[in-house]
Amino acid sequence: MLASLYNNANGRVADSFHWAHATAVKCEALTRRAAIAGDNSERFSDAFRRLFWVALIYEGDFVSEISITLPSGIARYEDVVPYPAPETPKQHKDFTMAQTTPEAEVTSPASTSFYRTEELVAFQISTNAAIRRFLNRVNSVVFDSKDQFRMTRTNYANWLLRITEDLWSYHGALYRNLPDFLLTSQPRRTPGQQLENASSPMTSGIIRVEELGNNPWNVLRLKGRYYAGQYIIHRPFIDLTGLFAGGMVTFTMVIILRVATMCTVFRDILPEDIEGAMFVGTRNLRRFSISVKEFEWHLSVLERLAASCKNKMSA
Image 1: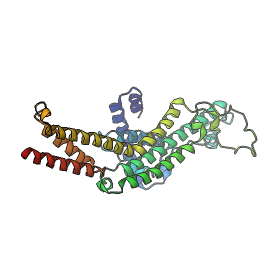
Image 2: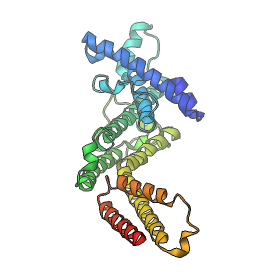
Image 3: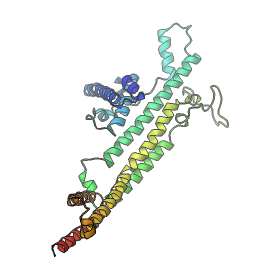
Image 4: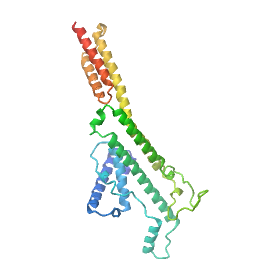
C-alpha cells in the first residue's frame, strides 16, 4: 500500500493502481479466510482494519474511473470488517501497567498527543471510507452498464432527475455533518483550553481531537471527494447535454450537405464521399436517439429530405 501511495504522489497512475489492486486482493483473501472461520469481528486487528479500508478507498477511486483489471472483490466484505478505532487511553494504560514497572509514567504529554493523532487518523480513514462506499453505490445505481433498459425507457430523464436529487441530498448531508476538525488544518483550541459557556465538563476518557488540526493534504482530499461526488452524481446530465449538443450539430451538418447536393453550383466542388459522410452522420444521430428520444423527429426530417432529393435527382 505504501508503494501505491508513493507512486500516486509521483503521478505514476498505472503503478499506483497496480499496487493498490494487489493490496486489495490480499486483504480480500485474508478477510474471506477469516469470514469462513466464523469468528467475531474482534479477529481483525486495528492495523488490518486500517489497511483494509485504505486499500478499499484507493482501489475504488481507481476502478470508478479506470477499467484496467477486474475489481478485487474487497467491497463484498465492507460489512464484515469494522472501521478502525484506536485503543482508548484506559486500554493503553492497562496494557502498559501490565508490561512495565509501577514507576513508569503512562500518561505523559507525548503519549496523550499520540492518542489524539491516532483518533484523528481513525476519523480520517472511516470518513473517507464512508464517502467511498456511497460513491460506489452511486456508480452501481446510475452507471450500471448491464442495465440497458434504464437507458432506453421513455421516462429515463424523469427517473434520473429523481434519483439524482435523492443522491445529492444524501451526499450533501454527509458532508455537512463531518466533524469540523476534519476540515481545518488549524487546531480549534490549544491543549488545556476549556470551551466557553460549557454547561457540563467534558466526558472523561474521550480524546480531545479538537486540539489537533488535520493535515492540509487530508483536508483537500476530503473536499476533493465532496466535489468529485457532485460531478459523479450529475455526470449523466452532462452526458445527456453533450449528446444533445452533438446531435444538433450532426443534424445541421447533414442538412447542409444534403441541400448542397441539390444545388448545381456546389456539385462540382463537393467531395466524392459526400454520401458516406451523410450516412455516418445519420447513423450517429440514430445512436444518439437511443438516449435522447427527441432526435427521432430530426431523423424523420432527414429521411423525408433524403427521399425528396432522390426524387428530384431522378426527375
